[in-house]
Each structure stands twice: as structure tokens, then as C-alpha cells.
Image 1 (cartoon, rainbow, N blue to C red):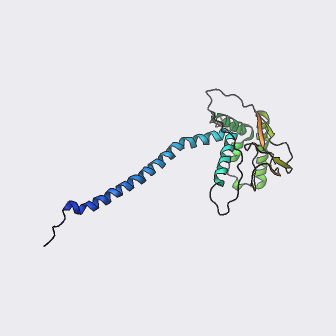
Image 2 (tube, helix red, strand yellow; image 1 turned 120 degrees about the vertical axis):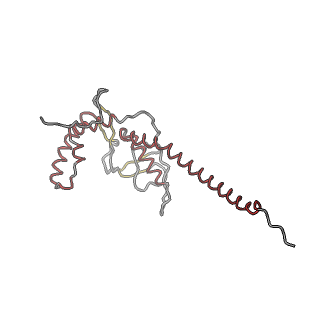
Image 3 (cartoon, rainbow, N blue to C red; image 1 turned 90 degrees about the vertical axis):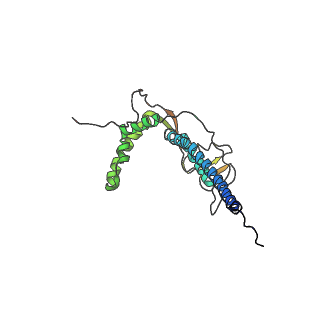
Length: 221
């Protein structure tokens, strides 16, 4: 006796179950992708703020550099090495508009022609010509530093001398380099004394001045 053929619904049921499973898997991965995309979009304003603030705040720029170096050192590498848990500077959140950086850059341009020098393509000039121009830029920019800032070395010791970094040292003021292993205290040679701005005396600007104009265009009549 011939068995009855299964109905169309019974024959399509496995296909329906397979499609349902595929839809569930697709929805799962789409949800993950959407979540990661949202995380990236939320971080975009933070990244833009950090970039603008780093232009105007040297301490904040050094902090970002330290965080980037520490983060990069934690990535897998063919020959990993032990790295000490160095103290991290406390984050200081405050409004830092780029106006001060633009005013200072404008002063470097006014007295030292720094922007002109950096914007010039010097590949076609000889070393003697570049050196002569650099002497003029150096003299003008050095005058700006003397007039508007008080700069002092971070470390008082002579470069090349042996120094010891005790536990709890400020990593934003002193950066250990080379083979950093273990915990402080660290003893090594002072390669660079560093620089610290003890005082800033930038000129005040009126609210109507556009500080993005580093040097006005000049028209000879």
C-alpha cells in the first residue's frame, strides 16, 4: 500500500526552520556591528576635543603621548619584556581653547617668520642658505620666548649625570626611556633636562580680533 505523501507545509518546515536560524544569526551579528559602530561614533567628539586641546596645552599633549606609549607597550609582540607599573599623572579636565596657541604662533611669525620658514619648500636651497635663514628664525623666536615666557629646565642636574627616580615620581615631568624593567627607584643617565614653562605672559587680545589670522596679507600700494 502506498504511503500518503507529506503535505506541502510539512515539506517546507525544515526550510522555514533553516531560514529562521539564519535570520537569528544575522540579527545577532548585526547587533554586534551596530553596537561597535555606536561606540566609534560616541568616541569621535572625544578624539576631536583631545586633538584641539593638545595643540594648546603642552602638558595634555605629553599626557596623551604617555598614554599612547603605555597602551602600545601592552600589545602582543614577538619579544615581550617586563614593564614596570609607572605612576600615571592625574587627568586634569579644564577648558583649553586654542586661542593661546594661535596667539603664540602669531608672535613667532611676527618676530621670527617661523610660519614662513616652515611653509617654505627648502629642498631647492643649499645647506648654507637654509642655515642663514634658520639663524634669522632662531633669533626672532628666541626673542619671543624671552619676552613672553619664563622657561627653566625640569631637572637641575647636568646632562649626562647619574640621577635616581624614586617611587612616586611625576611621569609627566620625567620620562624613563630605554630598558624600563621592575619598579622604582630607577637609576640612569640624564639624557635631556626637559623644559618647564614657569610663567606665561602672552598679550591680551580684543574679542573682535580673529586669532586664526597668524599674519595678515600685505599689499604694497
